[in-house]
Length: 538
Image 1 (cartoon, rainbow, N blue to C red):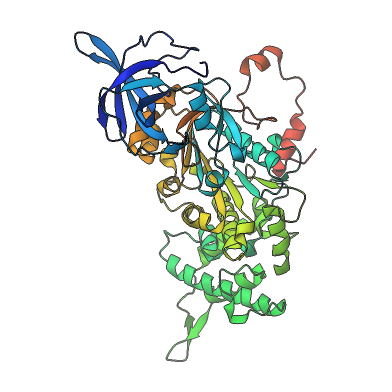
Image 2: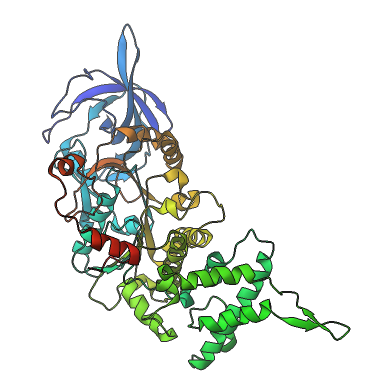
């Protein structure tokens, strides 16, 4: 398309709210210019009339009976207008009318639209079907108001997120990014300058857990004695923390609660619970009998003892680095990349026990939130949190599991932006992800979705005028996405840049390795790592 193209392709036959129906006067089966087929879903059209140039995005096209013959009719969403100064602005102040002519959008106009946020210099993809046109995002709105990356497995979600993060680290020298990586994909994409925490060096000590997280880890809510267990656990946690506040001379005294991030001796807390569990009292006759809580904590103590003796939980119950309250400062520096050489932390959760993932996620998310909650200079320390495969630990249904993670993440999405915390929420099953979380995302990167239930779920999350665009989701190519939200000038179909290096998430080459064979496989080493549940064993 040359810079001076102003090609007429049809006229308006209906205006309905934010939509315009366009009857095409050119052959929709033949390209008009540069392989551009008029009325193609995802393409842009212009309704030009005196003093106004309204831009629309085609969402669908159909054949219908017209005057004397059939005609092609394109349904387009009206997105914005070029003002008197030639600047593109969202929204329509003066609507076009029926009969007004419709044109292709010129290359100059497309450049003006897509370069709206060029001053930020942040782009991770190019507009599909528009040669050489980069798509820029408004960085503050993009990272500060939460992003949802949605798509079926194999569509390129991880590559999309990695491309975004690589661009951020490359452009900004003082980023603070934390990635919760459920499947161990991200370490390979960030070989330098990134802190990798995996099951071999992960340490989130028990004393960082708040009361609700302890409850999820140790109390079975279906037991008839659960309420009593919860009451005594709260009291024991508070007393144990207050005792170490005195011992460490922190000076907080009665300000310490069951939630305060203060070190305590776990054995002290367990001893208090055991004392309640075997407490004997004197009755009116002066005889000893079992107290009101006698035996209430039998199953509680069995569950806790089981976790304490399970080496998979050593990262929590047997800390070696964070063994006192002052060490919280070191942990925050490590995770939040403050005053250290790295600008991003990847937490590999692939080696963490499944039943502990919810608590680990809850602790990390809550620590980040509470850190900036109490940081009076939070505007100077914006933080980005990435949740991979979030539907696994923030489910849409509250079935009693992952309560702590669900609570922490939902609170973060609702309140985090006020405290300088943005999120990228990634999921291949949006229908199974908390609707509260998705409803708080202002930018959607929707990739290929083939499941009808997931498609309908995503369709409900976007404005009604744009729901037609979601019909394109099953046909998107790998690495292609529809991006919509306040951070982009227009809802746009984008081909995402391929990251370098790539995450370890590509499809396995069955044909290659079945043809050539794997070569020598060190089974002994694999079994050693498997048994020890550590990757660093050789």
